[in-house]
Length: 63
Image (cartoon, rainbow, N blue to C red):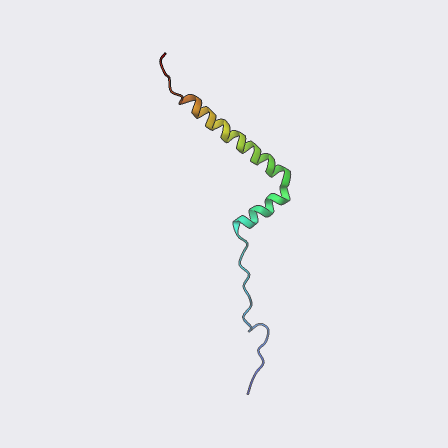
């Protein structure tokens, strides 16, 4: 005697949750201009910090 299995008994394909990278990319595309502005400000701040550290740590060569 064979019984047909109902749809609830079939193994369903589990869809894994999206990765953090995929969520971040989706968020960046959705917020476009704001994301670019924040990236630009971060880049300028980082370059300014590196230049400040280089300027404060420059060697003093006596002449």
